[in-house]
Image (cartoon, rainbow, N blue to C red):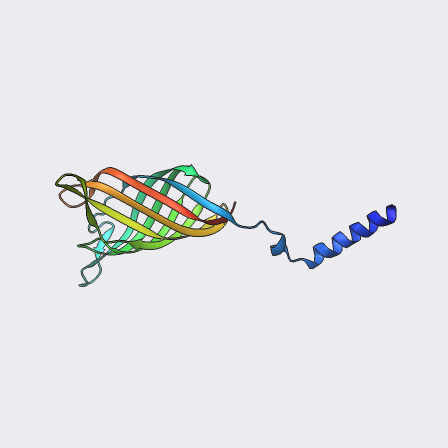
Length: 177
């Protein structure tokens, strides 16, 4: 009996030494969280938005989106900080930045889709801003996936967000918490 235990122990040690650590690591799990967007910081020309030469595009050097993740693998408030290069008329362009929650940090890269007008009542249209892209966890866990968000809002005379009427923010992918 002692001999069998000793052989089993030695075999376990040999196999542990031969199997790479990555094979022993936890397998990625499905990741999903969804929530709402509660605020979008205004861009101010000369402060955080500048013309990109004579191209008709604008560089937004620092903008924030705030929200709440309501259900899924992560819940609680989030803050997305990003830079963008957008076309002024449509607000379409590329975005790059970070998304922070209480426990996790994500690197994000994506696109802002052209602004569209959507009906909310008969003959009443409001702007809808849609963005989507890829995320990679950089702190708190490992993983990657996609994000999608949209906001329907009441604009002021300059097109800035006065009030958010409806919104959605969804992240999905694979992670190792």
